[in-house]
Length: 217
Image (cartoon, rainbow, N blue to C red; front, side):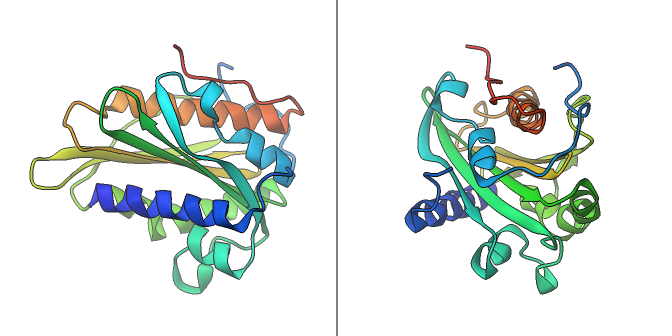
């Protein structure tokens, strides 16, 4: 189940790439002023190859304006609830160089912090929390972002691991979706590190800085 979800996310990232629209573009990442991001800032928020030591970029960071197509992708719940006042949607995807792990990062940028806050539970409860499978357990991400959730589950016949995280940083909702064909490929610490990098980059962008947070080499 997790692997299907990761393949779906990779496909979503591929759809973003096919549009050709993406080219123009701390200790507690919950601190700082919340500002609406531009499309370019959303693209820059997404981790790239330089930020992901040990991972190979399989879908480059891409951001698009939210229209009916991307509203259905980002908010696949009844009536596309949770996408109200969303502006830009972005994705990037990586495969680990040494194992069978995959991760997809997603960013949904809103026009205000209140809009992102209102969408948080709608999207987590309505869709993203379920992507870790019915037997998934919650785990802590630490003090990242303004709101945060994470679930760790298994997929396949051998209990291959997979996880999904959701974080709100100011005006953005952020997701990391990771899975591995091997039991040792993904664990809570790795998932936590991936979510933290994305959240830190979102905070840097909202502070007006060029996102530079990266995984430790």
